[in-house]
Image (cartoon, rainbow, N blue to C red):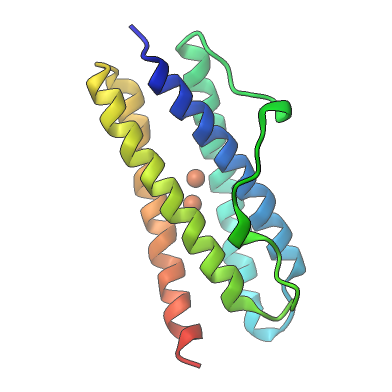
Length: 151
Ligand SMILES: [Fe+2]
Ligand SMILES: [Fe+2]
């Protein structure tokens, strides 16, 4: 039996992934300067991964006889990931990305537990895979943060 909590978390994670796609895309376009190039490339690569996460979450919702939400249910949450006023402020974007990845990690950790409690190993397995991707993103951006904070 599907737990409401599993469906709620899948739907919340779906919207978070799409907000992440929007903000990574915007920041990849907005940032300026030689030093921003590597960050922009990394964001571009992650956009495809986060979009893939949203698709997997949406398909899982469908398998559970639920559905992914449309934009009318969307509430923006990523304050720290808004494009910085200074388009060369690469560190602000890196910090925003770290916040978004930490948030995703917390969501997928919770989904692992809730799916396990609900006896839903397929959703649990998906949550573990997504958790692993987000931890890899966090590691990459922690590396960038180290370099930029040192300046
Ligand atoms: Fe993601
Ligand atoms: Fe991520």
